[in-house]
Image (cartoon, rainbow, N blue to C red):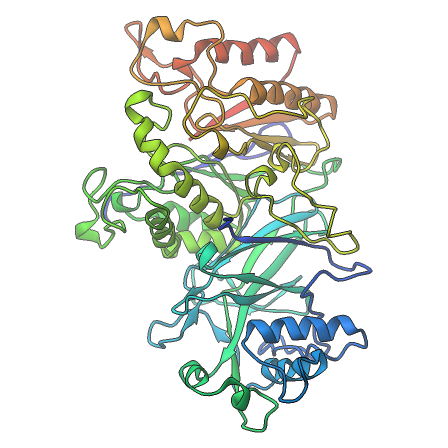
Length: 567
């Protein structure tokens, strides 16, 4: 383990395997606290909230018509019709929604309980990721036996309600006073995953969050009877209950110009293969209170059937579905299975993650030449969609055109689909000068689904973490060692556009006075050979011209203190 100081970039490395011991994307919204206006479905915190047993908040207490319209929308989502004779009057619908969301006889359901056959649960935990100095992505998945859209509430606080001291990591439980809440909608089109991009947060601050759904206490009766006669507010006493997720904890980064940052500690992980063994490293990292973030350098899941690369039969870790992944459903099931691992959940719950993909999120040796193209063309769209649904990563606008809502902004025009990717510079206005056209990449049967995910993160003036995509974005064909192919002067692992971006990112890091530049990438950068033979042509050894260009840029610009992390 390397200890971080103002002169040494900190890294904690762990192996994850141990011996057996139309647009179908997640809803992604952006919210700002303390704004002058509210985005759709914004809910204010209740003044009388009890941190131990939070209650659903009434939606019609505000004087503004906006509240009644929001209540009407929520009522519609809950299947609550207007009162008879109102001809759709939004006030009457809002009153019904008020009753639905405020009349309850149960405290918050504290997560998934296998003994309780609920129609809804949060058994995949919570996660956060891509932290910046003023924003962070929050994630969860709602498990539902009902194949229909549903509104999910998120809440954020500066303190937890308490700590679960029965667990080794003493994770947070409940919430203190809520400073921001909102509602997003998810459903089967996104496999019931939810991602929220919360903006306007304070730098270097710890936040606590959770998700919840409010549903009828008797869904079967609700379905079988006339909704109008059973809607709350019609005198029959129907009750609703609120089901909550575990409470998550996350931390924003220091401001880029913060000169007081003297230490950064990162947990670095990769290659998490479920049937190989248990994820003890995740559990150990979850116990560490001194880590600033978790960096996952690829192979978050593996696509193999059981026994092909690890056999989980004897340890209860047979991958699902038990065949090589091919379809969107396959990749979703595998991601969901990983998210049920208790050690993975524990680490996601308490630390923000910064992730990149490698090949096994898709298929082994994804740029492996013509013999792989049929596999890739079949699998890549579903694999990539599932990745963005299940990982707490900020999504490229060019892939989804996902709308984001910001308080005080013109949400009809402010976030229209744009050329380029927000991923390339999430916390800097640096422009790579390439404002038009697709990113450079070799000819491919699937060019339209290559969203760039290379991006950088500033930890004050101490460190810039520069995350690269050495697998998908611009990699030319890899495979067995081929001296003639590898000797080509223009051969590229990064692609021309990403390479230009990296050079400018390194220069900007030095210009702003950052002490360290840390490159996070998927494959070994240093030369590895024996008896004059390259051991791994799939790594940078197979792309010596590209490696030479990176090293020459570092040398020619006089850049100091550059570190490469490899997955």
